[in-house]
Length: 158
Image 1 (tube, one colour):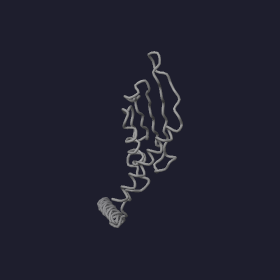
Image 2: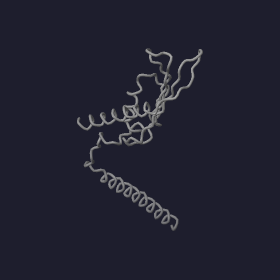
Image 3: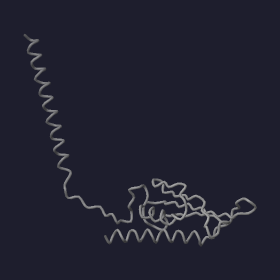
């Protein structure tokens, strides 16, 4: 008789324990559901920090537009690196340039951009490195930043 009472008590405890766990799970789910209100703020897509691609999207798009004159060798939006292949202007085929744009930050700022350029000229059947004027690199940076700011202004206006 004692064994039957023990078994009945054990079953009752197991049933009560399961019911308690189900009740706790239900209460937990209900409390979590109450956390998600419908009054969420809208995202400001024109913010200076738009980085769904890993870097600031305004700087990225402006950089691609600016170096679109040359064929792309590498474009890594996650790392923020754009490298062009060598480009020779048809008006001056004895000189060629290669540009590397690096976006260093997720914010639209002047110090979030670095441009490097290489230049070569043809000599004796080969290519010889030549210096690039600092003003040339600075001009490319200014063009990219101006385009990025314009893209942001257009996004704000719309």
